[in-house]
Length: 116
Length: 142
Image (cartoon, rainbow over all chains, first blue to last red):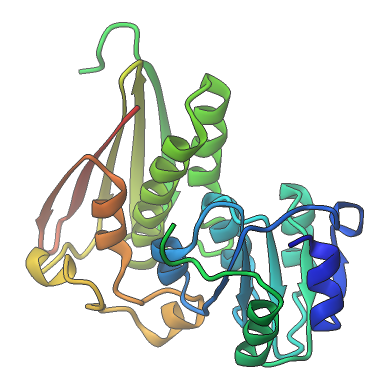
């Protein structure tokens, strides 16, 4: 699924990476604990999280996550946005809660991070 | 002692510096990529480095990360001055955490730190002395 589709399905706003919406994500991971993300997320996945700080960006960078969606309408502060921009990581924001955001993407065919 | 022909770098990590937390691991990741190591191996090594770095930031006063790369392996030595680990056996259990509320707010304290290092490495040794510090030896084969 492309980020363009993610944006449409979630009614999301693009904070950074407007020029990278053709990026393909292969799976989704919904999680607020970063070590759980590192334990379970697949490479090239989309991370949906309510953890809006620099560690979310760093975690994504370390684990080859392709983009982040911040849920519950939480907006990153300018420093977090700057770090995302610096690392080339697209960041989107949706007003949806984590459960519904994941559910919508899953229903549209974006798989989870378990299995092959 | 570093192996002959190995690539070596050392990094400093400051305890409590959440702002820069992750900087060393992302730098290590960039170096490994630049050396030309394959992406899945770089990812595994970067995850171990990040978890180890976060442990220093969260618990210790100061730490030092030594990276050594040879054609067949990535070796990380992470040594800190800090409280040490009371029970390594407990710390290795998935879900066990001694993280404070502040650390949890940062998204850590899932009790997956050391288990994540274990599952992403080919060799993992912990030495720790309470009140002195902790040393991790991590090896990821290329």
